[in-house]
Length: 219
Length: 219
Image (cartoon, rainbow over the protein chains, first blue to last red):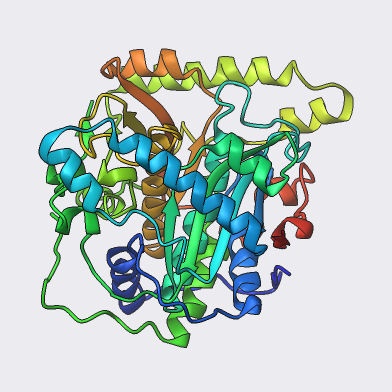
């Protein structure tokens, strides 16, 4: 449950917090190498409640988090990933293909927690406010909730890996999701085997950091 | 510039940080009532560099932040919002329309900083990794960067308001954006006039909090 104290004074975030927050952004990382240790279901429940503090267009709160626990469903998700990943490999040639084949792009086998994050396109909440001209902001609200979950999880020592190499329609069917729910992300959660400041795709020479995109343009 | 220290040990985030982070999520808020006080350009530059620490699909870093400073461009954005907001009002009737008309949905006139956040759909960075089956993850990466900026700004006492009641094609033209850049958000940034824990749309009785959506489903 959200705990809001109407009498609370606004917090004054000090320099130490600002610095730790920057450390959190730097050390957040997308994790694909998990320990198989279990994670308390109560902790995941707490993180989902925190995710619901995210901003949403028109206060629509369209996030729907689903924990995928049935072994048959998990196996179907893993097969979905394997097929999509094999198809993706066919799009590369030469050294790129060799490098792609070596990358570990998901921790679906090892991660103790699998979460699907959907956006409910049928929700009446928010009464459409803010999304007449940019309806995609409904999906963006779910992304903000996922990112909130991710940061809160990392602050507690948990890692998260966002898997997007999936057929979203097949995945929604596997999970029995309502027809109006759009899959936004499939998430692996668990204790990370390793901690890094730099993205794995940088370390593996797939894609370097581009400092040009850290800079603001002015018009 | 990103400052990554390869020798740094992973941080150990303590209970006090975890609690302050939750306070940050609760007090983040979408701000539409700004003071007109100026904000240091160096601070905005710093926040854009921090935003670039966000996760991105295939490490594609597709965010492009543009500061809108020319008065003529700002006036065109304000006119764009006014037209879209008037059209949106026509979609409501009775009490809903009366309430919509009373809401303050943007702080474009007062906010000292206007930022447009685009997604570069022509980027070669990431070499397509992770977005063959879910290409929308490129846009989602920009949302994560915006949310990172938002949290870092709030930790420094700045407020942000996400304006989505805009014609995105007309806005891109106003700003002279390249044709492959998709507008993800238009942001007002400045010192807030007020601080709240609850969303303005809750206080104004537009849309209450829905505690059902804080809960995890299990399948």
